[in-house]
Length: 329
Image (tube, rainbow, N blue to C red; front, side, top):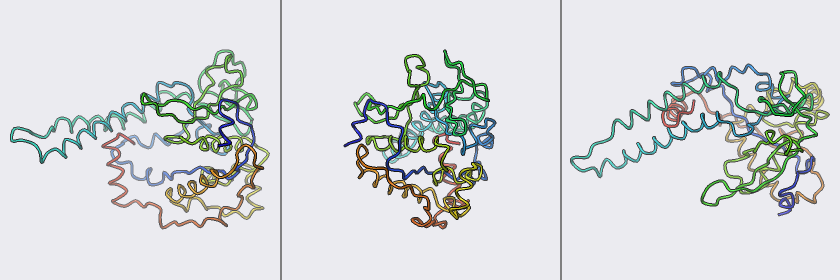
């Protein structure tokens, strides 16, 4: 595969496939039905502009953030506990006369998940996780934590670097003790020895055994940071396109409908991503000329709004199930 020629070296700051895409979840139903997460609305009360202005910022986790473990760790424990309870339920028909169902385990798991999903919004207010935000407007990359040797500060008082001083390296590394490996794009300052804390390993998919996922991510980021062009027409930016002057002007001349992607279900968006991924797999990433960008996606895909979820009993039951078994708000 031609893309493997990039392995270990800095990826070029160019776009080849040019069919950018990223799905976007619709949180309208989640905001209307909070389930048993009493402080769920806190999750959507963003106080930092770089967490809310998607037309200007793209945000990613950075470094070994202990708060990430504090978030994912209890969630994982709750999920494992739920699996043990489910196994215990399935074994009931095989219990002997003296065997009983372990009710205490069920109560423990439910209490744990209820406690955790209600504490998560509180933790989010106590401390901002270690993040890096790519600023399309200023061409800077800022960090929410201090980096030794960094002298420049942005409008938020955070350490920042020029976008042109950042690099992305494609790596293939082990992800478990069993020897499984996956590809990751690793972004850092070009002088990583001087600024090692700038390193961020991006998880592009659950198990990226194909490096194309990484190049698709890097292309989308490179294109996003090009503030001489309108934002790509993808679900991620639809609700914010009018806030970017260049994009708003482009949409006006392009006769773009105000609502397009938001009329699609998340499932339909995922199908489009899979379709584009299959096309990306066929090109020669190392030698092919850049492909034309899709600027009128409504001429290729028709929204199917009837596939979108509604606030019915099925949605509420699924939501409560995820909260009580995994601690997901």
